[in-house]
Image 1 (cartoon, rainbow, N blue to C red):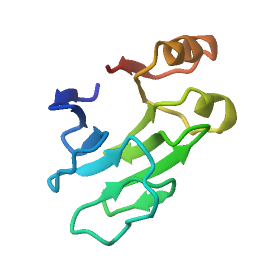
Image 2 (tube, rainbow, N blue to C red):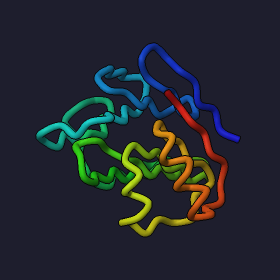
Image 3 (spheres, helix red, strand yellow):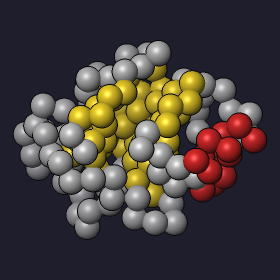
Length: 127
């Protein structure tokens, strides 16, 4: 089981990753919901994942995907866990993903699609 808790208007995942629309917190790896115009990798003292790319750090890996909209989806490998944070369900139909331990999603259609595709892993719905 992983820890996912609401923190202000954001979600804190495993006390390390902050999934947010706008909040930037230097204490966490910031997973920004909407793609920004320019890639900022390495320009800050903290990590802000806001562009479709692979971010490989010492103790974690994050890949940001963009499908159909400017909303980002995230594949996180951390502490022997693989987490997929889905905002656009089309990611499941268009991208080949590794084995996922935890699916985090904010859309009821995604839950239906996960069941229909018979994908294994714990499913966690957020607002």
